Amino acid sequence: MAAKGSTDEKWERILRGDGAIAVAVRLNRRFFALFPSPWRCKSCNAPFKGPASGTFRWIGYSPSAKNPAVCARCIERAPKGGAIVPVSVLMADVRGYTAMTERLAPGEVHEAVNRFYETSSQALLSAGALLGQIEGDLVMALFVPGLAGRDYPRKAVEGASRLVHAVDWLDIGVGIATGNEFVGNVGGGGFKDFTALGDVTNVAARLTARAAPGEILLDAETHAAVAALHPHAERRELELKGKSAPVEAFALRVR
Image (tube, rainbow, N blue to C red; front, top):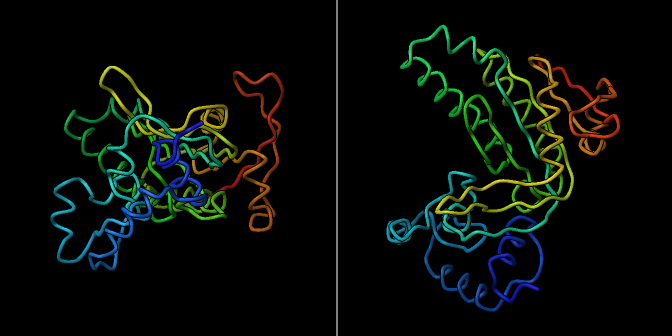
């Protein structure tokens, strides 16, 4: 069992957005509250604006690149560890990426990829995402109740729709799966990365691979949370790599 104020307890609080706050954390939040600011870290209460914000940023309490509602010390700079929490995992990748890179000069590839990362990140963050791994032609985003709210699956679908529309110069496919999974910082040998690990992520990746350009594929749990908003979603039975039985999925056509 994690000790009071331990890293895993902090992850639980950030990701779930509920639970008791340890005495040390409460004192820390009260101290940070003494510094006026209209915008603070949702977890530790560090000020992002106001007269003391420059000092706080200098020691690492700047808005996280993963989600600006929390500070970098609570996400990127936090020690290894995490918690098993409810999460909707979104993955999106570019169709025809290899062919596209063959047509472009090295400098143009760099510019195209950076534009894709920047645009997709803005679209996902606007829906309350925590950015996960971003590499090559793939982006990953996590939607948890602590940051996206109780309707986090709906926010994931909303973020996917915004993403597809935002990168309309590219053909992308999106997959979303929902369930309980480990979320946090993992790594070793000096390497650390913020991600989600488990079957939910695996299903999201497999759905992404099967999504057509401009299409969002949802697993059954994600669809159940948004069925009233998307009554015309196309139901499919998919054979996914690594799954012993067909997986029920629902397709949303965005463009």
